Amino acid sequence: MVSSSDIGRTMRPALDIVWFKRDLRLRDHAPLCRVMHNPRPILLLYIFEPDLIHDPHYSERHWRFVVQSLVDLQAQLSEFQTQVLVLQGAVQTVFDTLLSQCDIGNVYSHEEIGIELTYVRDRAMQQYFHQHHIKWTETPYSVVRRGLNHRQDWSKYWHEMMEKPCDDPDLAAIPFVSQTMVEQLTHQALAIQDIELPTPQWSESHPNFQIGGEKRAWHTYYSFLDQRGKSYARHISSPELSRKSCTRLSPYIAWGNITIKQTYQKLDTLNEADYQGWKRALSAMVSRLHWHCHFIQKFESECAMEMRPVNHAYQAYPYEIDQDVISRRLKAWKTGTTGIPIVDANMRAVIATGYINFRMRAMLVSVLSHHFNLDWRLGVKHLAAQFLDFEPGIHYPQFQMQAGVTGTNTIRLYNPIKQSQEKDPQGRFIKQWVPELREYPDDMVHTPWAISPMERQLFGIDEAGEYPTPVVDIEDAAKMARDRLWSFQKRPDVAKDARRILKKHIVPVSR
Ligand SMILES: Cc1cc2nc3c(=O)[nH]c(=O)nc-3n(C[C@H](O)[C@H](O)[C@H](O)COP(=O)(O)OP(=O)(O)OC[C@H]3O[C@@H](n4cnc5c(N)ncnc54)[C@H](O)[C@@H]3O)c2cc1C
View 1 (cartoon, rainbow, N blue to C red):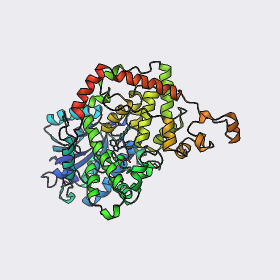
View 2 (view 1 turned 45 degrees about the vertical axis):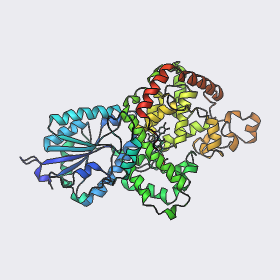
View 3 (view 1 turned 180 degrees about the horizontal axis):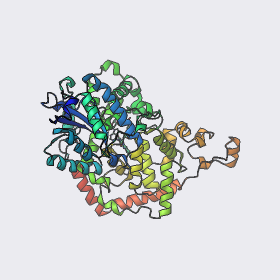
View 4 (view 1 turned 90 degrees about the horizontal axis):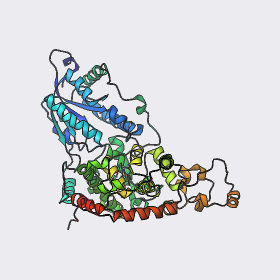
């Protein structure tokens, strides 16, 4: 073990680094496995990057979750008399500082399938490490393969990988640097301009949000398997019931507190007799674990979809161009004041808690892109910043799919009134998040604009604090959207690019 007294002596301590990113756990962690019995001491590092902190995809909720995940790591690591070195600063500045104190031979990390900003950062870091004679070893993220341009055998590969043992390191076999050395490195780094500790308010937990950390991830999963999950398949589309019956693992998977493989393999350990009546639930869940990797692979193979539609022909889609109309509709959508109760309830719920289920996410995008006829790019970062589970590789492909700009998927135009009546029949979810509608009778909460003055009087509905009327006529808007979407989809340039997309991304049905 390298101790603090080694720093500052003429001899610079030599060490290797495991650089944590979106893999905040100590189990099923290939880079940690690689450094067991490492000849040089191992420093664990996490960097809060100002560029990411200020990026519009992210918001405070994400950094709070990361801090909570790090607190969990630190608690586990105290047994090994080490800590993660946690700093806030540009990655190169942090490495410059470390290089001024130590001799770094190797850096180990997972490949990050992220937004362009992290891709550009990683390209720059590749050069930087090369210039400083540091070997950077990256391990693939889950089953996602870099540079893949077809999907032959992809499903087979997914299943094979899921059956392979998890990369569980023997932590006692890793020669971690001492805790005092981490403290000293922190102290020295903080003396450098532009390096600081993470913002203090991120340490304060917030009662509305899921709490980060490996322990919490497993706790959430066990509670799903103990009982919550039995009604998974039945409740998955209900905005209210899905909150309890779905796994709620998404932020833990997105920030790497738990892996897809761990989640999958846990199912093999279940006693069949205890899970009578769970078949539908568990098979629906496994499909989604598969989709998780499928979408991230898609994004990895076509990352430009962060900037433009995957089907290039949709660049010419006839979106609304009147700036006043755009800003009025967009503001209403972002703030949950569209006058469409189920839309507003979901937007307010996700702003307040970081979570809504799949169906409601899809409906929000459908209303934005189809009923409001706004370019999907105007809303994609807003929802990313709200989703505690923001995962670029799922978010972008899903957003584009629901916005109907792939040319390869069935176009789904969700009718928000029908969704509301079917998925929230008593309007409980709506009334929870749109208090202006609490006094409305259950069957009228879906279409408050239809209430007559007499009914208003009868039910004692206050005129003050009035709920807005819808920003568009829902039926007319849907009809216009249908005409636009269907006629655009018939264009030869859409079909041509759709063929290219299918060739590259479609997973052949395995026999
Ligand atoms: C527009 C849009 C944006 C989305 N953005 C994200 C995102 O940023 N991050 C994210 O994790 N999910 C995203 N999803 C997918 C899905 O809505 C969430 O994964 C799911 O609601 C999370 O809840 P859960 O953990 O209870 O999921 P469960 O239903 O219990 O599923 C288990 C796990 O499978 C994965 N999964 C579930 N559904 C999907 C799906 N449709 N596609 C891919 N993987 C899936 C997730 O990792 C999830 O945690 C998005 C969906 C839409 C329509």
